[in-house]
Structure formats: structure tokens, C-alpha cells
Image: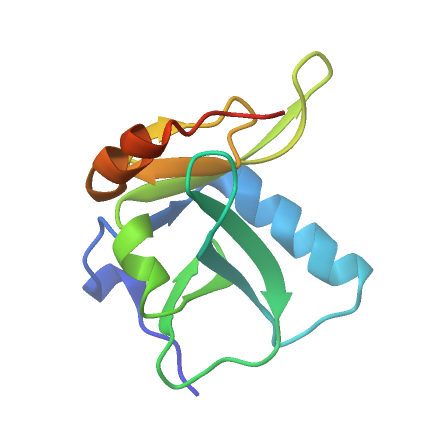
Amino acid sequence: MALIDTTQVNTDVITLTPAAANAIQDLMDKRNLSGYALRVFVSGGGCSGYQYGMALEGNIRESDQKFEQHGVQLVVDEISIDYLAGATIDYLDDNLLGTGFKIENPNAVASCGCGNSFRTKESSAHADAEGGSCYH
């Protein structure tokens, strides 16, 4: 299956920084995974209502949104793409703050202190009524 050329795709979908692309490529090289993509998804749960997920994926579905940035293939399912539009995935390697992926999401109006879960504008009213908070 051919990937979509991101130069012809709406640029406000998902941005992968060069640092994140290098970290992903290093992981795939160490695990000898060719033909894999980074799957980025959103699922229910976490302290704020939704949580981010990422996995190295060899099973690309026909309904997935497909992108390629900095030589790394990205796939996002048709539901998660609405929550991730405009997001940037970065990789931080900081001795003081820790090492790992960070997602900056313009759709999130609140997030957990750990940064792994978030709320959207649409989910905020529901969570406020239930008194959601971070338990980390």
C-alpha cells in the first residue's frame, strides 16, 4: 500500500519532529522492523478522559490515515485523527526532565500532570461535572 505524500496533505494533521523521527527510526532499527509504521492513537481513560498511545505497527488498515515525515511512516485511525489534528510529536532527551515522547495537542484544553492524558473542549463540560483530576 502506497503512503500519501505529505507535501500534498493538509499540513495541520500531525507533525513529527526530526528528533522524534530519529528516535522512532532507532527503535525500528534496533528491533529489525522494516515496513513498520508508528501508530498514534487516542483511547478513553487516563486522568483527564483521553490518553495517548503509540506503537510500532506492521498491520496498516485500509481505513487508516497515512503520512510520512522525515522517513518515518505514521498511521492514525479514523477516530483518533479528529483528536490529533494539529498535534506535534517530539522526542525529548533531557537528563533533568527525563527522556521520552511528548505530544503537543492544540485540541487539548486540559491535561494531566504526567502529560499522558487530556481533555478536549467537548469533553470538558462532562469531566467538570464529574470532578475529574489527576491521580498520579
